[in-house]
Length: 217
Image (cartoon, rainbow, N blue to C red):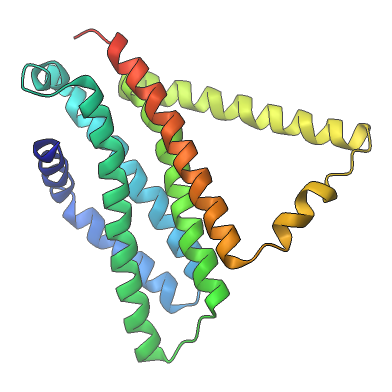
């Protein structure tokens, strides 16, 4: 896995100008008080950078070459998720440093609730994108993967709309389910979100492994 991680970090390094631009944009957003948006925006960008490494591996039969090396299919998939977590953690660290500098320079004061929402919004957004996109990229490749993902998102949106309309039509009271969540403590919320992220990534990982085992190169 170490070799795969080094390969992917070197791939990301080739996009350092793009990353510097994104960092500057996020720094500006933090400076003008748009912390939550900056965190979610950066989560989207950096999680998609992880997905882009699969596309790089697929080019010129690169995936087939990788598996002539001592790399298992299961290990390859695991590395992508580990790499995604590491890259998002690195991005969050850089964002925290930028926020600290901006807070000192501008004497900006963010509340603990703002920081909590922003950090967990970052992790939830990034984890969701990784969980949703990696299986499709691994199974279908770059072009077909995007199409399959778009269709899936559309189906989820339609299903969500149908459920919403069904709740209205049958006059279902969902406040009883939402009430405990609204009054949960910060620790309880953090634990719940951590479990949700682990489950989400775990299911996605198992699906990706299943797809990878069936691919032919």
